[in-house]
Image (tube, rainbow, N blue to C red):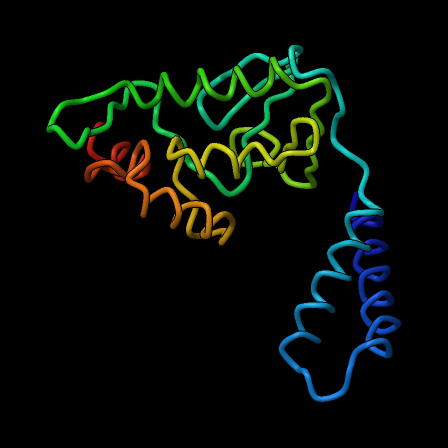
Length: 188
């Protein structure tokens, strides 16, 4: 696994160096973005998926976690409501946000012909931390954009989707609601 990561990084570096000669002079912002995207594209082309299966094969563990047999996957970059967590509504009521997040993930997976998950990392609980796509659409981005999960600030993914959901008062953003990490601390 370590050799594959090193080889991937070297391919990305080589792609950045080769692509730099194609950039217009004097446009440093565009150049930086181009080089980063080029490197990511090259790195992604080298990575094999952790798995590629029909969407209906999964079992939902939580709104941000799924399983296939003994293989457990936590979606990278998001934090969905905890199983027993309920969220606040704009009217001052509570709604079953955890259940809705799980149901939405289930719907996304069941509708998908193919789900691919990419991961090189496992967390302390043995879950693979992965980016998963259902028929090419990023599942984490979908859940965050629909207001059914928070973007994980520590990883920096899905900030734009979270901002749009918050601006539209969707799901978890319709009223102040404790994040899953705050909720876990309060319910220990």
